[in-house]
Amino acid sequence: MRAAVLTTYGPPDVVHVTTLPDPVPGPRDLLVRNRASTLAAAGVAARTGRPWFARLAFGLRRPRYPVLGGEVAGEVVAVGADVTGFAVGDRVTALTHMGAGAHAELVVVPAGGAVVATPEGLSDIDAAVLAAGPLTALPFLTDHARLRPGARVLELGASGSVGTAALQLAVAAGAHVTAVSGPRGLDLVRALGAAEVVDRTRRDVTAQPSAAGTDGARYDVVFDVAGASTYRRCRHLLTDDGVYLTTVPSVTILARTLWSARRTHGRRGVVAFTGLRSTELQRATLQEALALGSSGALRAVVDHAYPLDRIADAHRHVEHEHKAGTVVFSLA
Image (cartoon, rainbow, N blue to C red; front, side):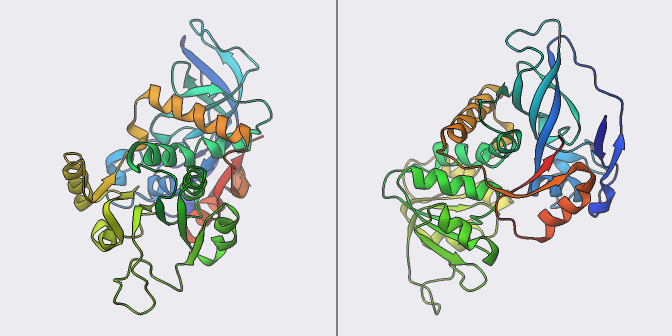
């Protein structure tokens, strides 16, 4: 099979396509012919080894996982002897362990893992996108945000993979969303339902109210999708019972998360590691995301689709350009 492989940390060109032996499923596994996967900021971190905490997950001196990729969307081509509930020919969508192994034409996934049937009418590319950003956005917003109709939400980094999913989910919950994006994503976030749109290159929404051009607005939720700010910088934006959410850990936000867990009222700051949730929760969230996409309630937003041979170009795109949606690999 063909796969995108890296053996050292470095720039995009350290990832290259090569031929590897076809994997063999165990008695409780599925072998899936992968048709689509995605690349997001976490994949760039796994390739560069930056920031520092990425190496705790992906390897201190060199990459622990030579094949990256967290989402599999394709067709079952073999099943283990002990597998029930799946058969050859089934279309499935799955998540890999530690977000690795999916940038390949064949992928082994545990039949008891985070794998579900792909709904009829949903393309493999759309399924891969729905298995990416929404798998982070859903737990943040359902577990920590306390969304309700009329809630005021500020989203920093609204046009990326997680951002576009979070924006749609917040709008569907009846929230009034202010979406902050770079120029390339402004029309997109407006089309996805943002009540207010801010060009981050023209206005710093986190600036203190005394600064020129700020209005002193306060929010029930500040979701810093891209880790572009900090709890300290955004604290003044929160209502008295508001919450600051971020996907990017730091010593400060880790301490704030532990402190916030002991409180039922007052301003809170939370970082969550959605990839470390139990298999049962991941499977349930994956099922929910695909169902929302199949019903039309959640749109799979594709920024650009690359063939596997252009893996280095995809890494450059994610690392240096501000995405308007999700970057996808088509392995068909």
